[in-house]
Amino acid sequence: MSFKSISESSTLQTSIRYQAAKKEMLETILEASRKIRVIQPSADGEVKEQYLKTIQTFAKNRGRDLYFPFLSSGLGSGPFIELVDGSVKLDMITGIGINFFGHTHPELVKAVIDTLASDVMQGNLMPSIQMSELLALILSKVGEGCRLKHGWLMCSGTMVNEVALKIVRQKKAPATKILAFKDCFAGRSTAMQEITDNPSYRVGQPIYGEVHYLPFYDVQQGLLPSIEATIRNMREVLARFPGKFAALMIELVQGEGGFLYAPREFYVPIFDEAKKAGLAIWIDEIQTFGRTGELFAYQKFCLNEYVDIVTIGKMLQACMVLYTEEYNPKPGLVAGTFSGSTAALQTAKRVVELLYEENLLGKEGKIGKLSRYFAKKLENLADGSCKGLISEIRAIGGMLAFKPFLGTLEDVKAVLLSLFDFGVVAFYCGHGPYLIRFLAPLGVMVESEVDQVCTLTESAVLTVLKRRNG
Ligand SMILES: Cc1ncc(COP(=O)(O)O)c(C=O)c1O
Image 1 (cartoon, rainbow, N blue to C red):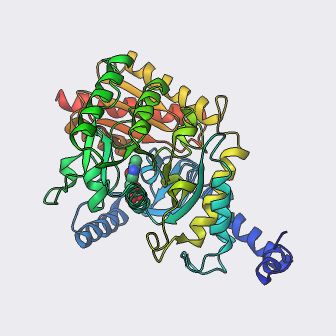
Image 2 (spheres, protein in one colour):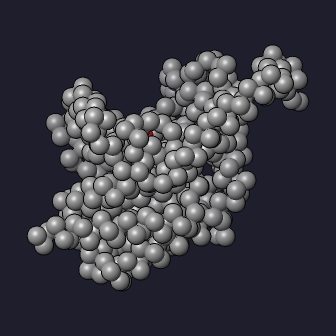
């Protein structure tokens, strides 16, 4: 049955007046958006002064400087984003992975317009149709052999990870501990900062002894020694704390950790071992969702049948924890006022649809092709004009990184600031070496824009070198 014909809301959206107003609004927005197609330098004079002052006030109010003098106007076009001083940047980090379809994408603007008459936020007690449709769409895409059957929406990646943790603990009670991996990232709450393998993110915070870090796949060591090391370590810790571990939590491609990933042949024996020990397999796909060339990274690595819990977020525009029938929590464990804004939920559905409609997924999909092109261009720099200056090109889908110079924090910051001056916004990842990180909007990029990013990367790196050589 379709609700299309009976609600006043549908009557409104299909009315001639509404359609004409929407068309006019969209055309007006896109007309402005189309002007933002090239990098523009920062403003001079009075505008510059006012811009810097606004940024300083913002930094003062939040008690911390911004990483770059970046304050967006909200308008953009493809990978280009306008700042409030009228300058335009080429965005290669997309709000740390939010805007995979770039800025002011016509389809996403349309989705937002269609929510203008709705309540701004919605929650689990009184959801709107957008939430129901989004959940149904995601669950229809979990893939063959995958047992994920339910999902719950929250407003951040950290919160859906919290829910995942509570679900596995409830199911495996009295076991509470988590096996995670060296260099992993899970979020910023008290529990997630403990799972996150980065002591500098939890200074002055308590540690509850709930997490053990397994060694991750080590390219230098190779496959078999890596598997042996991880399984040996897992057996030791499980034997030391019998009945205490509830789940194995993993990012199949480590995000903050530096875009490291293993082949399927590493994950399979590790997951088999964890399953044998009765652990839940919890995959954190908050950064990888939609980005690796398949909708879920577990699909890319053909691990559908292993997953018990999966968390997604970032480019979806919404955050969700997905779980099997077996892990459906008891009533009372999971709730929360907000599930997302209506605009975000409507946009999220369009994001997933666009990944399919625009042939972005699969071996021959646009993500894979453009990612390979991008990686090749960066490798050309590493072998050519930037030889000895950049190395360790890492690429999987829209996740691309490289090591500048020796990969120290100073090296990374110098190159990032230089890139910003040349008009490219990026960020870093990794834990020594540190790497320049691109979470590129491959959903809208074309090869000539990849070329431009690489040319500007070359200029940025060579400028830092020149400065250092005095
Ligand atoms: C793998 C992973 N897990 C969890 C999170 C936390 O998500 P959020 O920042 O939305 O709370 C992130 C964010 O970067 C992430 O990359």
